[in-house]
Amino acid sequence: MSREMDILMGVQRFENATVRAMMQEMIGRLRGKSTQLQSFDEMREKFAAWQEIGRGLQDIPLNRIVGSVGRHQDFTRSFLPKSAISKERWSHIFAEVVGELGLPPVEVYDLCGDYYVRDGHHRVSVARELGFKTVQAYVTEVQVPVTGDNCECA
Image 1 (cartoon, rainbow, N blue to C red):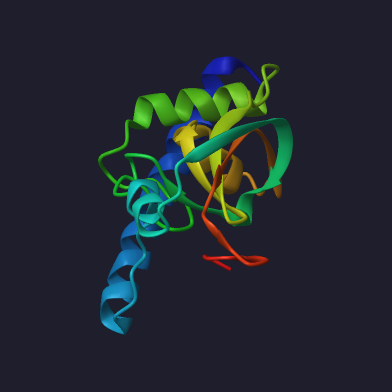
Image 2 (tube, one colour):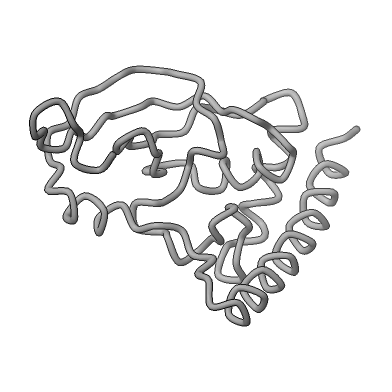
C-alpha cells in the first residue's frame, strides 16, 4: 500500500477511535466511572516518589500503561484519542507504523509497576488501535519510599 493510502486509512481509524472515545466517556459518566488517564504528577506527589533510575529499553505491556505526564486529559484510559488530538499527526504516525518505518520506542515512567507515558502518546494510541500487546519503551523507574519490605503503593 502507498503512504497516501496508509494516511487515509489512518484518518479513518482516527475518526472511528474518537467516536469510540466519546462513547466510552458517555458510558463512563452514566456509570459514574472515570475514563480519564491517571496523572503522573498527581501519583508521584501522592506517593512522594522522586528518585529516578534509568532502566533502559524494554518491551512493556500496553495494558500496563495507565497514565500520562501532562496529557492525561487528551486520551481515554484505553488511549483512544479525544477530539483535542491532531488527526493529521495521529494518522501520519499510523501510516509510519503500518508502513516500513515501524514504531519507534516511547518514553515512560514506571511507578510501582504501572507505566506513565512521558513521550509517545500518539504512538501508544496507534499501537493500541492496531492491537499491539507490547511496545518498546525507554523506562525510567521512579522509586517510592519503602517501609520495611513493602512498597507503599503496592
